[in-house]
Image 1 (cartoon, one colour):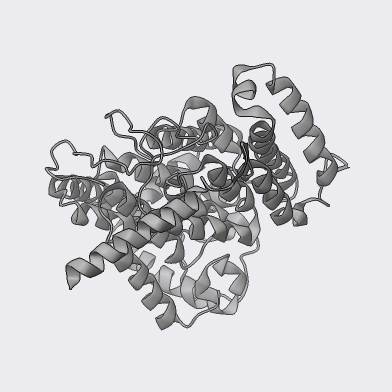
Image 2: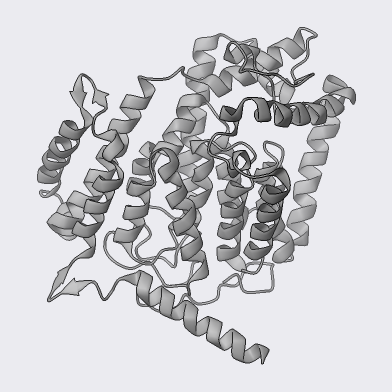
Length: 440
């Protein structure tokens, strides 16, 4: 009975993969996917069209920039290989990212999160309290008055940075985050050109603008297929960022677990004489006060569903999502836990959605990958990344197909060294060095 059910599930997953692959979306020899995808991206980007970028409307600059770049790109091998629809799709989406980033950087208070880190760590060096000591009823007056949310071992790092000149620290920190994001993409298997293009992807670029550690935590996730202990270290920054560490248990990578625990333990012991044992209690209490403050200041939830659900419902759904993710082995399982960590975030901002990228890149059709990246680039539309990521995880694995796919020629995110099979066929199992079991 169980075998019959599993067989039916496998058949259903295969049927869904064939449907999502969109090989059927042709009229004669013409592929409808690229032009339809561009239309959907424009439709989901309507809210951006009226924004002013350099005194000109987004809705005017976007098609003009796309047209000019596509014309120039047609003179290169890339443009000739993609064709007009494909070139317009990719260039149009990347151009929209760049224009949005320019607009966003002109609208906000820059490096808010970095200034929170530096301000709270500076207070700690001066003998003050970096963590919340009671619930609040409003946002702090400025970033430097805000409170640290990360465990005590990170206080000495940001404390040291807070004593350096502000300008060089800001430039160096942003450069560090950009380098982390670029290296993350390379570890996922993206070529250099796509790794550079995705630096403009708004959820990532917004993280640069705020100075948030999201690019670093994503790097630790991306590095985990090679260095599994990095998932344990990820939990030092944000509790939800540690959820993918369960993948190590699922894969029985016990040595990686021990290595990660050893690194975190060593950091805690080395910094303990500096931060003191009471700082750990203050950190834990501070998280409780932050949760209480969110109830009074709902904007602090960001895009998190914790704002819309009772705590027990939110916790239950988060736990169920983690449990469901653990049903998948190998790279899909790791990508699924990345998705679960998004939902489980008690406070969720755009840069948190970067954890959906590995799952999104598992989609077979390259144009659909670009549709998700284009339609899920702004505001609450970023939840499209989450939904599409789950579709990619649930359906049967298919190799990246089409000239537009950022991972064309590989077997998907975290590509294996084996030669890829023809597009549209299931990905073969991959043996991990030292793991003794397949990862797919």
